[in-house]
Length: 342
Length: 150
Image 1 (cartoon, rainbow over the protein chains, first blue to last red):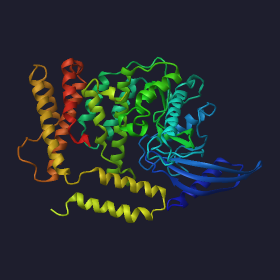
Image 2 (cartoon, chains in turn yellow, orange):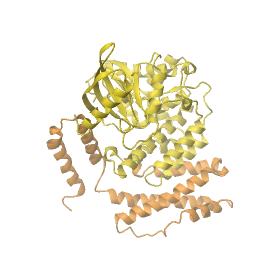
Image 3 (cartoon, rainbow over the protein chains, first blue to last red):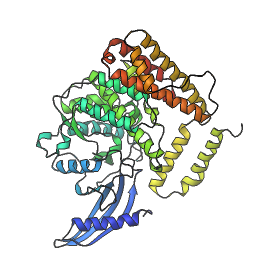
Image 4 (spheres, one colour):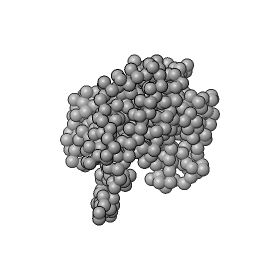
């Protein structure tokens, strides 16, 4: 248990007791922090309690807002979405309880089921923690494309989604992203203003068939057991919009080495597999906007982390944000540059 | 100059790798150390000040590019005047800055001027014309050899 854990264990026990008024003898054990937690703190723990039905024991995860939250409503959005998706066929953690205002857990946090498997952002690379060979990794890469198609095939009209998940046009998304970008700059960034100008000048029409967009779909955000993906995690950036938004995010050049396997699994393979799974063709030219836009939002996240670091949060220590500007600048400087990426 | 900054950082990394890393039992601490090592590795500490000076030269070229573009059309100088009024730029000098702080301040001033210029033009109807798109491509290309090549 880390130094912060005893206090958190007490808080968790009190919170669970408040959520389970009929329970007695609520106990928390094995509390430990997992991962580096840049967008969320993840705390693994076991909970036990008794009630009229008998003794209960659960393996759980607390996902709590970090001290310097980048997306203010992230956990609440994620909790409400997971609740709405509970009956969908998607492999998801089950959302149990939410401390919306952080009254119990110090900061907003939700408690979800702990699913089998491990997360590994290097899953598809030679450096994956399970030492999987190329064949297994290609199989996982195919599963990722299929899972993304499954997400985009969810019938959103049948879900009881909160109003804030309503369809947002590309123009509205850009306006929101531009405001966030400017607010998070740690120095004046003409590079990002050039990209915003290009995005504004190349706005696509709103998608005629909006879908559930994960918003951060990548190997880092799934759990894997053996050679099978068991769970899709991290829904805090999800929204209803154009499926190309997820494709652009997955194809963002900054993630190339983590999302593709040189000589075995390319951008073309990924798109073809996805197209077969959804039964429609992806407009490669339209992807250019979404790849640039994905990078623009990634730059904002990087700048937000750096701003938090400069304001005294050492957990946000990271490489310079401007390292991820280059692919965007290439794509807006040269109309054909995106073909290297998709 | 011995040891130079890179040599010192190399020693720090070696100490972290060989002495500190094996003693860590917490996964969170190990991940944090990995991040520290990556940042120490990814920065060329010997070149930092010179990179700012070099970028200042490139930013000055971009300011010049914007001013020359404005000279090509009677409507455009007013745009430049608006930027100059909003973000006064220090007088350009040909001598290198004598301190890192001085170089970084000039860097920030030029960045602010260029950001204001791009914001104004992109919100202006002019911004969607083919000439402006060409200017935008040229400006984006001009940034490419900068520190973004890391």
